[in-house]
Image (tube, rainbow, N blue to C red; front, top):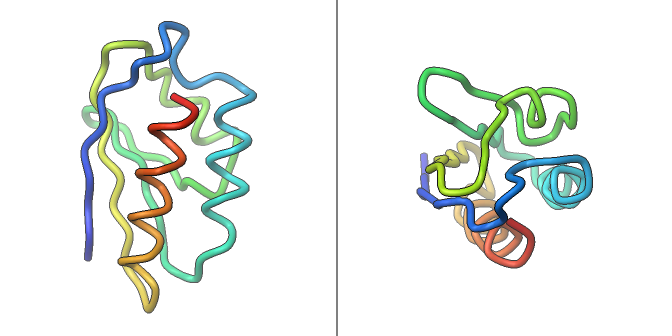
Length: 85
């Protein structure tokens, strides 16, 4: 299992546009990719789950990937988050 932490820099947080980009990127990988905010977690491949986290700007989230392509998936998620959130 691989994981990263990221502090959201977009002041609005996870909203529809960047969440859609994250989901599209996550769906390219076989690994299970989860996004965590506090006690909540969401499947990064499901838009509504991701948006339901309610993560706002300045908050820290963590992403875990587990599966055959977990290293690539985690690196891709980190890149997508930095570019869009």
